[in-house]
Length: 55
Image: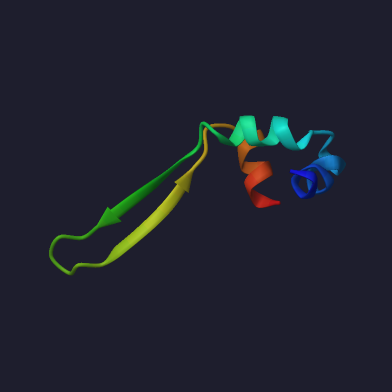
């Protein structure tokens, strides 16, 4: 938690607040049925969540 707090300090967000904000993000898993190609995408719901995940 202290590492997250230190990293997010420049954005004026505490570590616990950052974890609360990204809690509502989600990961989507996709698979092509024909080729079997798989990929995943992290989908965030707000600009602040994206900013946190980019750090």
